[in-house]
Image (cartoon, helix red, strand yellow):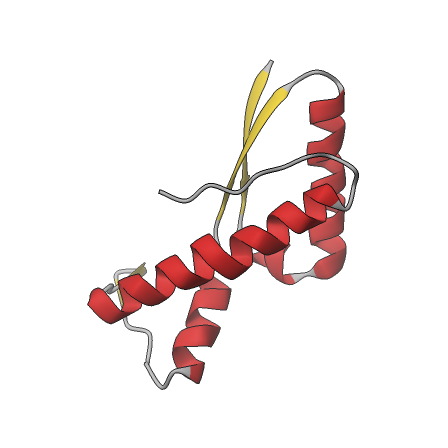
Amino acid sequence: MRFVVKLGGAALEDPALLHLCAKAITELARDGNQVAVVHGGGVALTRILKQLGKQSEFVAGLRVTDAETRDTALMVLGGRVNKELVAAIGGQGQAAVGLSG
């Protein structure tokens, strides 16, 4: 079977929860399934933006994304968050690769 798993930012921020998610993803793959993982990371993005001195702005629950915020989102989500997720799955002994597009 094919599975698409969506991990929200909360699962990525809590090491114990990330470990459990990585274990479940690994078990799906080991059972012969094809697994694609899509992740969030808005909490991490907001944190990095704040460190850079940029206030996050939301309208109707959606982040306003100017060019600077977009570039930071690419760095955080395609970089750090993605790599931490791949590492967590790899830590369970399952090969994983992170893609960003």
